[in-house]
Length: 192
Image (spheres, helix red, strand yellow):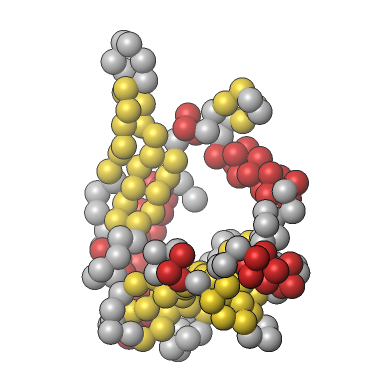
């Protein structure tokens, strides 16, 4: 959805947001400015995290090697690269879920539900957007990303790689956890 349409939808829903903020860079010696991306902050969704919408300029992704015209071409290219590399050392298929801690769970859950056109989720219930990972909100004393859950086709392969490289924190039957001390405190769970 174009950012202008998303802003109109935010206004319809009564969700507060910042004015669009364009990041520009000088394109060439003529001094002409080129907008690379534009962000709109959704301050109501968190007191301690920056939650924002971002629209990238197609100019940011235009390249001849390999040829790409816009962000959609770039997404296809990167998806193909991930497949060609068999998901890297872990064998990652996708990001399945992002778990967010909410200090004011009731208000935060209501706002996220409104934003995603869903009912207000119960604590721990996942909200699924039309594309991308699910969002799971959990009550907490702070606002922070608690964990990111990545999906792999072969949990054994991921487990072996993490063990061999000293990155394994915890092994359970249905998931493994990467050592958060190796990821600046972020918990990454790997599931099949």
